[in-house]
Length: 253
Image (cartoon, rainbow, N blue to C red; front, side, top):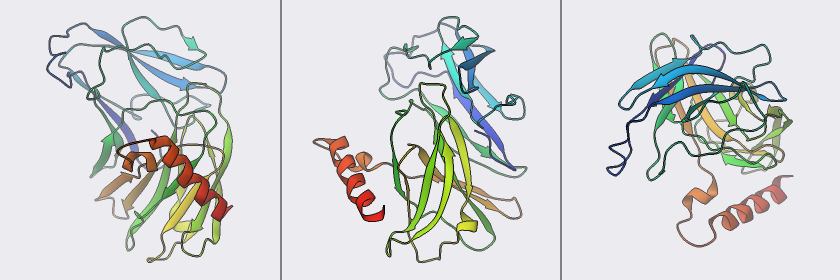
């Protein structure tokens, strides 16, 4: 991911996440995928052997002139063409329990912050609901980064709306895009210290991150909220999520 003022990075670990794939040793080819709105452009980044750990960053991978601030890194067991109409879906590894791990985030001259960055494509037509308690006050610049990646290379835009969850007042409206890392300045929106932001997009799904940047550059923080389905253990998880979204959308829109 790319965001103003910081370096984006991705660490890939070719290390099996379980005992039953520990003997896996075949080499994979790494590709970056970047959309121009019509196709996914691929670029070969070399190969990777079992046991290797490699870091990629926005310092050494150039983003194209039509860049949406997002590149996908894909380990492949076959050669990919230079252009793709859709993100590859064939599994490179035979199991995902637990997931093969990657770490992605941002760094400054003094600090870095990250999360486990495995990503599965989001639906092209979907929505976003999140409550965002991660705004920090004092000498901190607060950003909201909304990450979206879909199978399709198309870049579409939609609204993202910022409400006071208690009064249900609409405070601000911004635009976000698919297949992008969208950065929004939360300090400009101006939430008070006791207000819980309710943030919705009726048009675009995404993974929302709170990014805190201390003004002296000495510290960074990043945390993402989880969709409602993440908190449901049994039954129809996504049915519960749809019900929660429908209820809040009807209250706020």
